[in-house]
Image 1: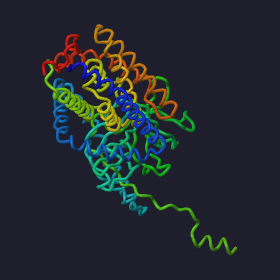
Image 2 (image 1 turned 30 degrees about the vertical axis):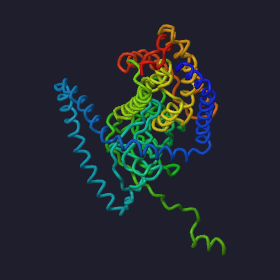
Image 3 (image 1 turned 180 degrees about the vertical axis):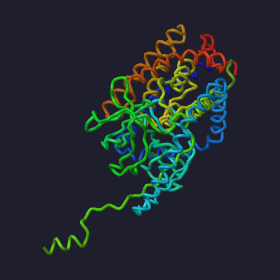
Image 4 (image 1 turned 180 degrees about the horizontal axis):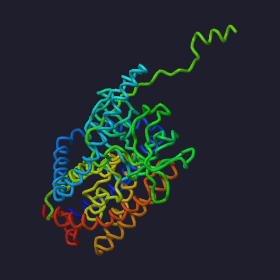
Length: 291
Length: 179
């Protein structure tokens, strides 16, 4: 009796269930199409969802991350002696560098004073803590705990103490997503010193992103310094990105200066639009008009 | 584990949600910010499929779709596509579940493998057609393989620890008599 009742209700429900699955599928595909057509709106929605979900897990995430990192550090104690030797050697080198840096700093200060140079005072930063990573092996990004509430804006550069880490893309009230230089969607215009050539650093999901669109590759040497050029107005110019290395195929890649092994605190540089100069100015224009 | 009344499926659905939450939590921990050379398994898909084959009533379509979309949003994937494919795969396995009930685990594994390969191919194909930036092919394949390797473990864990087992023929003859 019970069995036959269930059987009947199943027969009755089956088309309904199938309809439900169909409707769900249409909704999902619809979401995909909307995302493809009007990406910013859906990405804003995504940022809102992330902003709601991730901070609520933060109370548990921080201790677990800390514990895992302590365990990892503990494992490194096993080769304490070797590390100590290595550090001593590095310290020796650093001392000579420090001497050189001090001299250069004094010289730089003298020269700046001679020229009466004004450094850009508006390059201030907000510091955020890394809360979570992208959770997928295919996307390279981290979430930090500062967002629109702290005045962060899309496209600003994020650095650690050493160099450029990525750019802000995806902004919630209290969180922001930093797309790392290694992500496949990351493209950063750079200049290469000392040759002064312009190029793009293209993330390809490997540790060292690829360097492309270089004018003449002959002038590149492994070890050349790579810094942002400020082209396109996305990043302020002159941020350290890394050094050139040649991969096994002979192509130039960038060894990133930022410490990607341990991203903990990130500085988000406040980059306001620099005033653009697009007319010749009243005085010159007036003369040109008269003459 | 015997039937425990009408509440039991709801408990298991709750457990499914809780497990998914735990998966998200572990995946989002900021431990690896260096691009990995290998891709771990998609455990949500493995879990969903293992349960869809064993007890389809524990993974209703609405729940799977909702969770999959949430995961798409959180993991920064193109929203909706992988969720739609997961739902399709889940429904395909649900339809085959009565047939798989009497077969061995290898048949079950093969069915899941076929579904997953089709899903991965469709995913890459659709992304290519829509001209979206794609992850490297190697990583996608690695994720596929590692998910397939993880599947038996997920199934065994569901079977032994969580008590998600295939309905025995005797259960079917007298459903819910014990409740």
